[in-house]
Length: 215
Length: 215
DNA sequence: ATTATCTATAGATCTATAGATAATGC
DNA sequence: ATTATCTATAGATCTATAGATAATGC
Image (cartoon, rainbow over all chains, first blue to last red; front, side, top):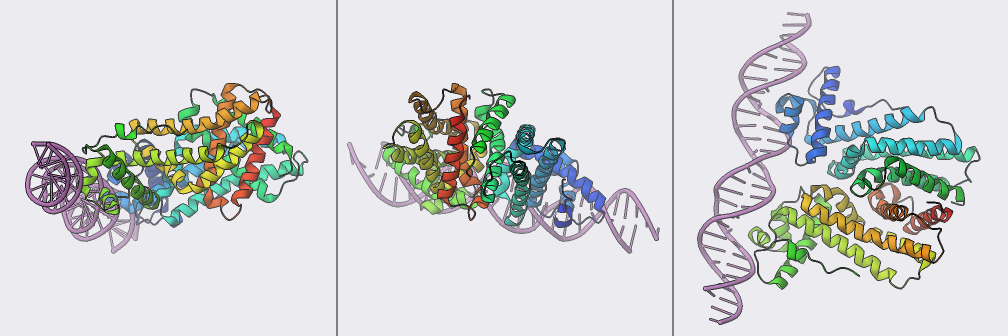
């Protein structure tokens, strides 16, 4: 259920051929993700990006109008990959409480695969211009809503006690953050817990809390 | 129980008078915190820091040997303030489960007060040199250990079912992150939840989960 | 003719230091 | 004499663009 991505309609390009714009931007994103993860956004020169993609600095600026645009394309692509990853694995899962439980596990596994990328988003969202930051935060909300829906389903099925809709949202955001935590607190968690151990603990933790009811 | 801070023994200065070094560095930190929160570390010139403190760029480099040093001093001061804030309010609290519960509330209130600062740490820890980053992460662990102790106390008092020590640690880190979440997800939470509402939800959430036992 | 790409560079920074000056204490 | 501070600037970037060149299609 990954939305149609309107990015390339929004980020301005000098080049007319839309397919070329699409493939070149994908090249730019692929190269930049790795450079940004390694060195950070501010310490990666635009020249270095162009070099990694394999064309000149002049050409880079035919496909974006600023370095800020590149960062936005990167963040957007990461969110898209996360969203697609979750939807792909969650599709076959059942409804109700077991579906929610499975969803959490699937989600944390995606966070594990995308750990570097998630950490990049945490670091660099603040570097984005206000305009692009809004889009990135909207992406974040859209992904969170996957859990909002799952929780509501579990309530409908009678597996969870009814909750205020504001509590459903807060619970969904908390699940999101617990997934991210596996990425941005790796420096502590890695080596002490396995991915499976972490998933077991946190799903149990979340499930025990929600089963109480009264939120 | 805020430790004696050995920073100024570690960050190199050209100036001999230790008291002068101490007060000047405090000035540098106070000015930099605000500049970094507003513009970010990379977009704040060292010149601008010196200007804000009220002395020359040359003098700035008498008290630190690089811009990286300034960022470290800032991160360290923030952690110190958070730690002191928690200890100040938590001191009078009782032991056991109620002490843990109260501790979570106190901690989230500190996170609210220090929200800008916490977000800065999340953004800029990655910009630190490896050397300083290690120190900052150690600070983070030390603060987390406040909760490790509280949880262990609650277990000793018989208020919580016994837990593996690895689970105690993971629970403490999760509590830390739930506090931080109030800061770094303000863009969503602010306006939808009050601080008190957030604290009520999350303490209840955590307490319900831990009461289950079997971790 | 039009589109895509490249070269060369303007123009604006920014960090860090060297060496001069001022202030303090013997 | 020693310590603290300031001025001036070296030296190294970095983003973004203007204008030239190459490739493609009519």
